[in-house]
Length: 276
Image 1: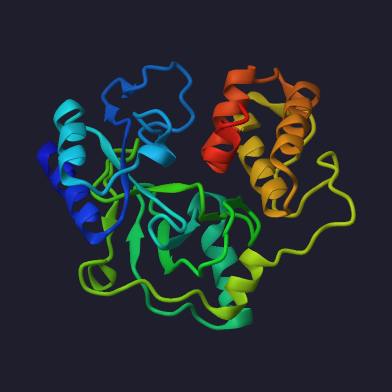
Image 2: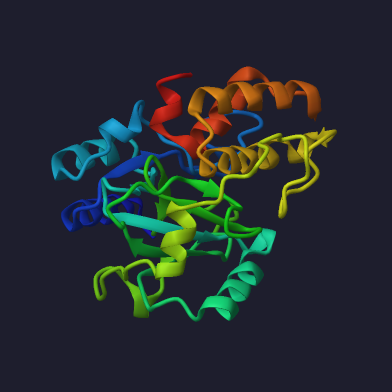
């Protein structure tokens, strides 16, 4: 697919009313950020203060894709776009978790949906008008949520594996509108139960072991713990300090502070960025 098609798609999202941002892209040598250990290749923003600078304006979007013609496309979620996205990560059992939820509560309504580059699913719903926090694993292993302060990668962006994100042709945003969140899912996302204790040294259902975490699991575990704390309404400042301490005590070897903040920021968005 010609690179210009990615920019044209970004313009279309803007006309649809969805604020977009340019993301790093994939080259034969890896992510265009050029970091030797990039943990989100082709998925992180090219612009600073992306929550505030995301745009629907064709002139701005054209400028971005003239400057970075290979850039992937990020679509901002939450009240800004009117969208909440359920991210089904098949590599971590998200399809099994979703099947169990649908067995308990009934099938999800037909809504806008895309296949991710890693063969997962992005299932889009209307934002309910009340804050929906980003979370990782709150609904079950492999099920992440992108709401206020978040974004997703959208078609025709290129995944690190070489495959492009693609809309389900029967659930394309050009043909149908996102469905409302089912009542049970809305309740789960907006009224989470507060645990009696918020210690992150205790086992958390659906998480990998969270003590003596090896190098290959540090970012994934930190991402899930960030989602867990924020989804349970732990304050931003407290979350940052807990996660920094957890990293220093439990990661082998610990991540640098910059790496910790980048990982937290990828989940928490602008609220944590202002405190970083």
